[in-house]
Length: 140
Image 1 (tube, one colour):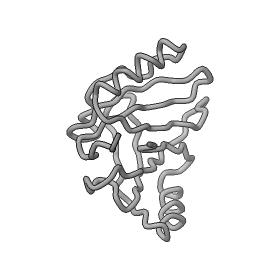
Image 2 (cartoon, one colour; image 1 turned 90 degrees about the horizontal axis):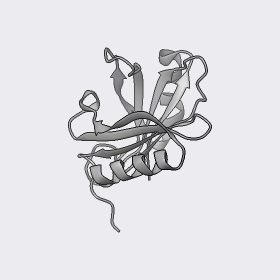
Image 3 (spheres, one colour; image 1 turned 90 degrees about the vertical axis):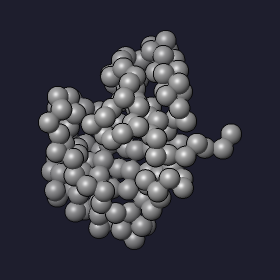
Image 4 (cartoon, helix red, strand yellow; image 1 turned 180 degrees about the horizontal axis):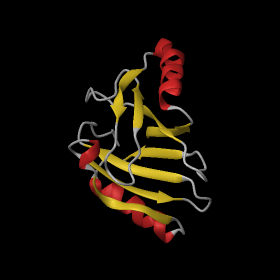
């Protein structure tokens, strides 16, 4: 299940207004801007679907961030049912030739119960596997 996608943009405010207008008919709304003071964590503008954060289903979010030189543009967050699944996916990605882009562990700057690991694929695309305490477990 896709949990979130980062879209690198040239202007957070302009792009935020565009995405809000374009996705509002689908029930998406703003979930806030995140002004980062954490090294390596960018400032973000977030949008989410109807169920995001409700605890009734795994919702999806889109996070806009300023594009950095050399970025591929893809940053994909995938939902995991447990921290153990996050750890296993991170280890498997590294064993398959991926590169570490932020080891497994808590990410308290994104909220309580946020546990993630980051890696890049063989072409430099960035992936995050995340377990959020707010998400219910998915049926087997």
